[in-house]
Image (cartoon, rainbow, N blue to C red; front, side, top):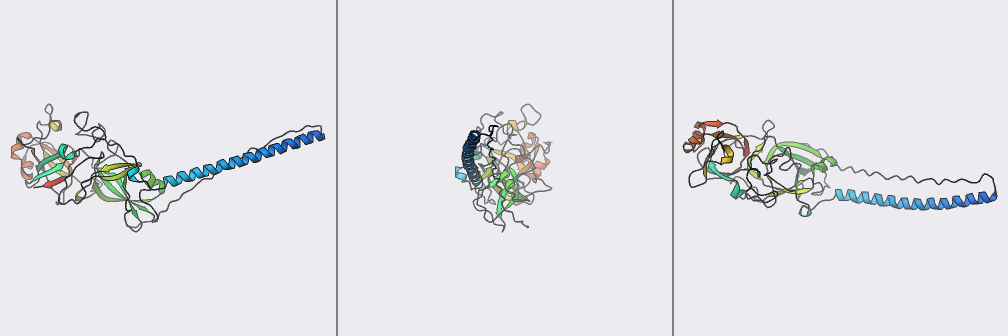
Length: 355
């Protein structure tokens, strides 16, 4: 991939100040007294003008200094540890679909840490009947949001630079799935000088979209999701990024490499059943997944697992009749069940274990 050199172009506009001209009138009788008075008046006004010029010059110098300091501040690195943190709420009506606080007041409050290990970990079956576990990060679109990663012109990443996003849960266009955009910065760029997408654009850096997709749910600071698939070497602890000059936390799931498919996040099928079938009173997701008596084992079945070519953590949900629950234990039996609603939603559920 070719990279064009981009440099910062900083233009400072000098503050121009027009000094008022001193006006005077004299007597029309031509007398020496009048001339002397006029001369004295002009001398006094000249002195005043000179004083005003010095004063205005000092003000201009102060303005220039203030502008310079402001520009230096804007172009100086920001320590993420000292920056403000963005408030995150995944359960507002504008952010959540299946999980909304307005429908379940037991969910954590705005910006409160979320324990996904205890609240959103589901046990189901893989295509071959092996027991799997996956997190539930709610409904997500197939259209990824952009995330910006900064690199020097030689291709090396800018060490210490946080990735940059421009949407968070609740914003229009937010998605847990991010299309990576490479941003080329000059060799003298210092990490975390730019902390927003607007800053990237203002600097005129070269931006190159890629087909790479990352699964990075934005979460409140202090949230936990400790499990990762054996194929996933990413850290379980949250990663930090920039959003409009504020720090955000997000999980990274890399149990499989993801790439755009026809401009969209790829999908894989999952078959699920609920305690009450959709269409019945209180049916569907609000009734909860049907599980075996006395334990948390659902008979939800994924069509793929990490390592399969077609695997994706973004699942196209097929809801089957819970009357078939006991007969479903793998992909073949799930495919034979009565499907009540095909493609009901697309949900972000990364598989984090297989037994």
